[in-house]
Amino acid sequence: MSEKPPVQPGTVPAPDSFSIKVSKDGPYIVHGKPPLGTKFIVRNAAGHSWSYEPGQTFEVSEPMALCRCGRTGNAPFCDGSHKAADVELTETASFAPLLENSVAIQGPTLTLTDNEAYCAYGRFCDAGARIWNQVSEGGEESDRLTARMAQHCPAGRLLVFDNATGVPVETEVAPDIGLIEDPAIHASGPIMVSGGIRVESADGRSYEVRTRQALCRCGQSSNKPFCDGTHASMKFQDGLEPRRR
Image (cartoon, rainbow, N blue to C red):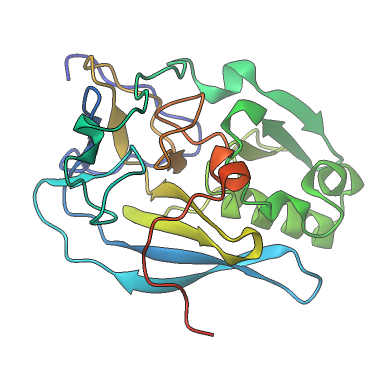
């Protein structure tokens, strides 16, 4: 890494020992031994995505290779299936900071920025009055819900700023890798990368360091290496043990 990677406002970068390398036409190579486990999207009484429930955990190694073609028989780890799979794994995502292509919605006390290209279809933004309406309402409860919805978005497409200070409303989180499972839509979701872990492209350039990122693991995103929600329409299944009812 020759140049210091860009860091999204409000993000505390993980120590340099943590990183994810996107290998050319192959898996994600993870360094630093961050915790790895499934995370189930849990709905509230109104049927909205509301929280994450931890599931199965996995032993981590240094380094470890996580599948990104969606064909492995040893999920979540790579088993070499990409070599024979007819899956296009070329990276197509921009290296520009998300804020450059975000729209801003200003409310009385908070401003929401949204880069829809990075939607991972977690649907946490639909709780309450939906985040785009909620931020416009203002008031203590609306502001609390706005910040909560943004901070649960697995992809980090949403960022909330305090109008008075111009500072993002963020909470520092430890480095972690979660394999999203979404029982409501009967699909397995992306790899949620939390805690400011740097993601490096196959050509050696680093993407913007963010608190929350969602990496594609079905192999079908049009915004690789990031998730674009395609797993939902194709009903991607990773074959891991489902959540016990």
